[in-house]
Length: 233
Image (cartoon, rainbow, N blue to C red; front, top):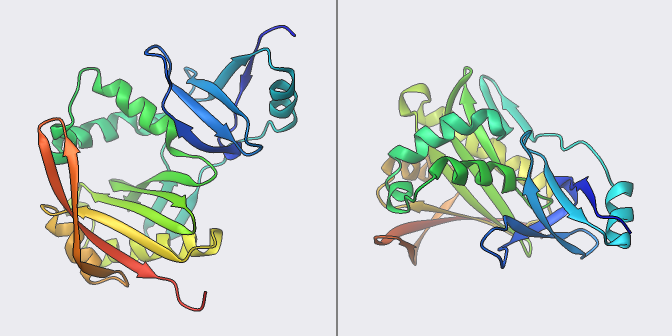
């Protein structure tokens, strides 16, 4: 069969895996357990080029629009990140102590890939806005009934502690409705006192025993663990 370029909808991607070749972008595992390499198009779509007949038939039969996740509460809006957010995310990454510790050349390309790979069947990254002002990012990955979360607030002046707690609780509620979860785990960097204050006021509980060290290009940074245990499983 002739090689064809076909869009790979994010809604049928289970996870991204590292590409074995230096020129590659990502290998994805699909909902039917097939795998293929993907690349990001100029419009942000993921595509593959293949002559595998079974893969072509599967992809053509499952073409669909990748709708963004949308969560609203009062003036808060949480929406799946897109290429339109690249400039804002890049600016935030440049001021983040953790992102700076991982800094490499062509960082904007890393941001594009972060956006392109964020949404799958079991994961997403959302822009948090308050009164139409971007304030931070929330991300999740679901593995074996456990939600692994990230929560980053960059624009502290545009959101109150109580509003940030509300955004976190809205996200938690959304995930518990969408997935069969037993536990939610959120790791926050030790230096991020703002987010730790938010978590201390939320339904998440701090794990005093957990010590998490995250390697960086210049050493390691410590994280604090918070968790929410789902009752009546």
